[in-house]
Length: 280
Image (cartoon, rainbow, N blue to C red; front, side, top):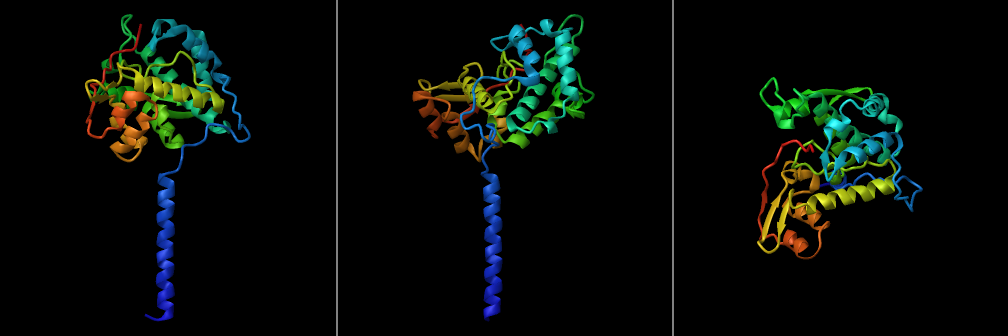
C-alpha cells in the first residue's frame, strides 16, 4: 500500500470514528437543564406564571390524586385558562422549565376538559368509555380528539410525544395524568415555570409514583416486582434495557426496596392498567 492509500484509509477511519462518537454522544445526551443559565442557586419557591389560575383550580378540586370534575365543569376560570393555552405561543417561552411547564399543564388541563366535555346524562365517563370510529376508546381519546394549543391543532398523543422528544426527561411520565386510576396521581398544584421548583417537584412526583403501592408492587419480603405498564410502554425513555430501568427506579428508593430493584434475579412483571376514571 503506498503512502497516499495509507493516508486515505486513515482519514476514512478517523471520519468513521468521529461519526461513532457523535452517535454515542447524542444517545447519551443528558436531559435539558430545567435551571436557567445564571440561576446556580435556583429558587425552589414555585412560580406558576400564567398557570396560577390552574394551580388554584387544582388546589380546590384535587384530593389525593382524585378529581372533582363537577367542580371544574362550567368554571369560568377554567374556560379562561383553556383560552390562555390556545393563544400562548410556546416559542415565546425561552427558558426550558417554562416551556416544559406549559406543555405539562396543558396536557393535564386538556384531559380534564375532555372528561368534562364528554359528560353524558350527568355521568363523567372514563377514558375507556369513549367510543371511537374504529371501536377503540383509547384511540378516540388520545389520538383522534384535537385541541388548539399555542396556535397549533394537536391531539393529546402528539402533545405527549412533543414533551418526551423535546425534553428527554423520564420524570414527565409522573407529571402527565390520563384521568385514570392507574396513572400517576394528578398533583393538586400546577407545574411551576421556574427551574429549581420544577426540578424538585418532578423528583417528588416520580418518587411518589414509584413508591405508591397501588401503582407499583415492590415487595422485598415476597421478592416480587410488579411495575406500572408505563415502565413497559415507555421503556426506552428510562434507558437501554432492563438494567437501566432497574437503576433508574432504584435511584428513587432506599433500603430493602432499593436492593430488590437492583437484584437482577428477581423478575419484573407488569400490573394490569386500570382505566377507570380518577373522579371523586
